[in-house]
Each structure stands twice: as C-alpha cells, then as structure tokens.
Image (cartoon, rainbow, N blue to C red; front, top):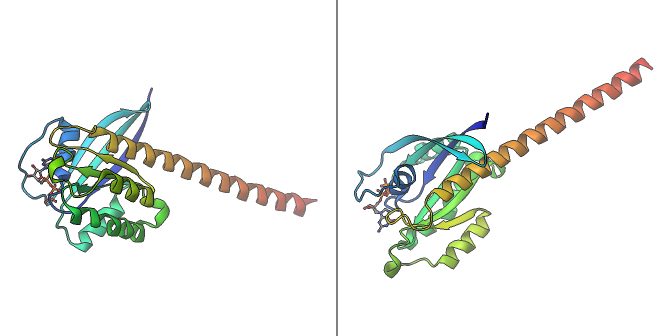
Length: 198
Ligand SMILES: Nc1nc2c(ncn2[C@@H]2O[C@H](COP(=O)(O)OP(=O)(O)OP(=O)(O)O)[C@@H](O)[C@H]2O)c(=O)[nH]1
C-alpha cells in the first residue's frame, strides 16, 4: 500500500496577484476571470507525489487580511506559496517582508516555501524580470516558478507538488534527528547504569 501524508499549505501575496486563480487552476485546470476578493478559502486535494499519497489542505488567504489573521495562518501552515504578479513591482517588494514575518512566527528552520511569479502571459506589461525573481528566490533559499494561472503556462501544479516534497523531506529529516537524539540519551543512561552496577 502507498504511504500517505497530510500537508497544510497556505498561499500568501498582495491582493490581486492571482492567488485564487492559481489555486483554482491547480485544482480544476481551469481559469475563471473574476473572483470575489477572497476572505479566505480552504480546499482539500489529494495527489500521488513520489509514490506517496499526499492529502493537501490548501488555504487561499485574503490579500487584505489583518496582521492577527496573517500570523494565525502562518502558524497553521506547514508550507507556504508566496505569489507576486510579474506586472506589479509592489507585489514583488512585498515578498521579502512576508518571508521575514514567516521566520518570526515559525522560527527560520520551520519555514518551507516556494516563490511564484504569476501572470506570465502579460509579458508586455512585465515589471519584474525573470532574473530578479530567480535572484530573490536564491536569497530566500527556495524554489522559484513563473507561471500563468490564466493560460496554464509554466506548469501551475509544480510549485504545489515541490512544496509538498520539501515539507515531507524536512519532516522525515526532523524525525530522524529526533530519533538519533533519543538514541543518544538512551545510550548515555545505559552507560550510567552500567557504571553504577559495576
Ligand atoms: N492575465 C492574467 N490575469 C490573471 C492571472 N491570474 C489572475 N488574474 C486576474 O487577476 C485578478 C485577481 O485575481 P485573484 O485570483 O482574485 O487574486 P487574489 O490574489 O486571490 O486576490 P485577493 O483575493 O483579493 O487577495 C483577477 O481579475 C484575475 O482574473 C493570470 O495568470 N493572468
């Protein structure tokens, strides 16, 4: 039987960058032109990723959420998609502060994220180059994708799947570390007991 895992993903980014459009494109392979500005929505989705059945809970946050809500959503998530709009430099400038807030809320080692530049179909209106996106992702130590929720170009599924992979990798590493430190403690106690009894 295939292994299974549950992963909670939250999607952040300035209002209007296309968070809802991306999530809906990922889940349904469709694009819907107009959405009500999101209050917040949660979706469930299952995918087979590297021979593991991954159950995702995806939270599409509201670009205009307040700080308290934002921090709550950051605490909730295991992994994060930060989205900017390649035709809106301001949305790109929001990315680094979002990462810093994530690090404050989660502690740096618990922040697993991918960066997505959306609206790649609007090349004529581009304000952020692909190289700038790549550079920022390198600074933030995360994977980077450019895509279009509108046309589906740039493989919209990949950021979500890669994020699940990274969350799972880190969970497995964390478990191994905890197991090895438990083993060390057990060995130390055994040593002490051997000494006392000899
Ligand atoms: N051309 C183009 N338009 C897009 C794309 N993605 C989203 N849009 C449009 O951008 C607008 C905002 O999209 P939303 O998905 O509502 O953005 P959001 O980030 O969820 O916004 P909030 O819910 O207010 O935070 C809508 O009019 C979409 O049709 C894209 O890839 N290309």
